[in-house]
Image 1 (cartoon, rainbow, N blue to C red):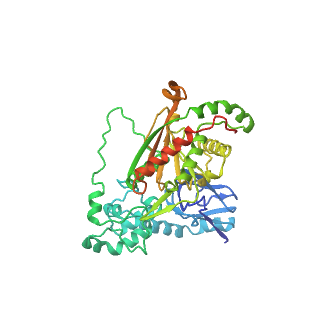
Image 2 (image 1 turned 180 degrees about the horizontal axis):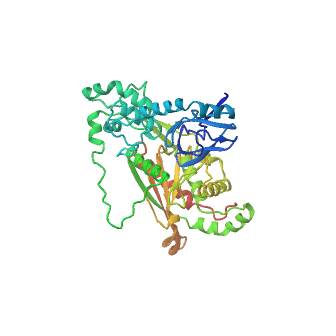
Image 3 (image 1 turned 90 degrees about the horizontal axis):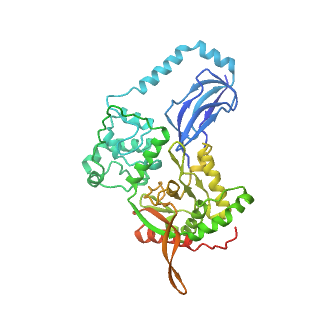
Amino acid sequence: MAQVELIMPKMGESVAEATIIKWLKKEGDKIEADETVLEIATDKVDSEIPSTAAGILVKRLFNEGDVVQVGKAIALISTDATAAVETKTEAPVQKTEVVATQTTAHAPSAQTIDKNSSSGKFFSPLVRNIAKEEKVSMQELEAIQGTGANGRVTKNDILAYLPTRGKQAASGTNVAAVSEKETKVEPQVVQTASVAKDTAPSHNKPAVSVNAGDEVIEMDRMRKLIADHMVMSKHTSPHVTSFVEADVTNIVLWREKVKKNFEKREGEKLTFTPIFIEALVKAIKDFPMINISVDGNKIIKRKNINVGMATALASGNLIVPVIKNADMLNLTGITKQVNDLANRARTGKLTPDDIQGGTYTISNVGSFGNVMGTPIINQPQVAIMAVGAIKKKPAVIETPTGDVIGIRHFMFLSHSYDHRVVDGSLGGQFVRRVADYLEQWDLNREF
């Protein structure tokens, strides 16, 4: 009987794994080539996996909710339909034995290992199963420094920890302080147990009562991912925010003058966002140490300038598509990228690669009428900027004949940065430079 493996495909740059959301086919179902077999999720983007061959689905190798590495087989498909049906009907005992074995292997122990810890750490099904079998407590899992994406504890992390369990407590070293040759710590610095105990949150989750008339709403998958990512970011980076108010009168007047002709010529609407991104990119080129990431005690200086733009969805959730190599685009190119990504985000047509590889993020809180905000860093980046609503204000204007009072358009820029690697001097100069580029806008600029 000929069988082919259905492989978890590579879905974008730096995407190493995906979660199975839903199987659309059962074992024994007939499948056509290119027919969707299951739905998966990677970070914030959902995708469908089609069959690579026509035949019968004879085995699903993972369950819904399992996290699967890219390149792993997720199902077996028999291309000999007749043989597949005969195998299914003649060997029911074998199938029962497999199910029994799986049930035994995954039988829960007395202790409970939750998918997410109180501090926001995520533990994969494989890590939780190892923890149950080895009687590793939730508290011990919390203390392990993960080397996976966003500090996630991997299989290798927990296996490296097991032989040192007793020794770690006696020596007073951190449970994750395995040899640096064996474990690459990201993004936290290894500490002694005494320091970790003092700095780690010691409080429990607050008890929440449900009163008569209250409505309990289950978070959807995207909201859970956002919540986990935000908690992780605040635990990872000491946030500092600097503010600058910019006079953007020239930009407002220039956009009003050119937007109709631009839309007629390019078939695109000209919003303020591409203008802000252009100024941001110029400032990043002036201050390249804003365009970095932290890997343990190392700083990774990024070559590419990939700007993420936080985009609100109709569901109330948030997604951050990325404009790749934004420094290589002119204002027209940035405008087309902004409009395309925003439209595909709101219609659910982004690909996994569209949200990968960002090196700096901008969030337009002004679109909600807010004058400023204190945005949370999109890890593993080290900074993020929020642009507020543009408001008319009276201002003192210097002229050759003296100062006069006039009406000007002002906007606040809020710059949050990781104080581990970005000091107030750099963080403050950077946001000031963005404001300078906006204020120096040429009213006669050709577009």
